[in-house]
Image (cartoon, rainbow over all chains, first blue to last red):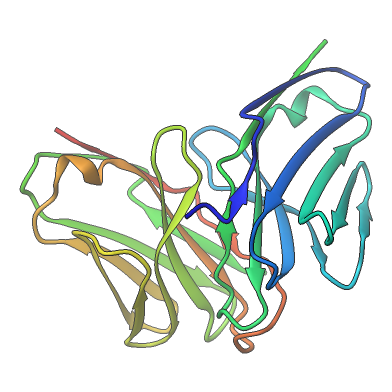
Length: 113
Length: 116
């Protein structure tokens, strides 16, 4: 049962423009959400997080938005750069779950010149 | 600072052979440790997690087992590998400050396991 879904397997964006990645979840008990970036043959790297008490968190070019009523979160990357080309995973956890996360299937982002 | 090491980076094994993948964490104590598998084109599936020495929880029934013989060492094993065990295996750690702490997991660089 896939509790975290990333329905867009790929996204192509021009350098300098905004990348918007989407993630939906079904478990209303999730209260902590993360985005990871992954290059081929490497482990995922933590990008940004948000807890359910907030609806927005910003870190440099990366902003995560959380819409709890819609069970939806998104990652905005502005401006997109060639080094942002990677697979992005969203992940979610419940507060009392020993740090276990449910991961989406990932979105491949390609930033073109 | 904390670092996580996984080895080997790649491994090719015949069907029916044993497996041992090792993961160690440096720069922290009493971490929560996790093993994930990423099948081709899929997300990350949690296989095992551990909140202390000798404490292992399994998330999915499978041909694999895990052990934590030391505080910062996590081992993934199999007695007889199956073709379906092929994949990319990732170890991760998180600050072990209780079940409800909101902190990210940090991943090693993974092991690419191919079963022939």
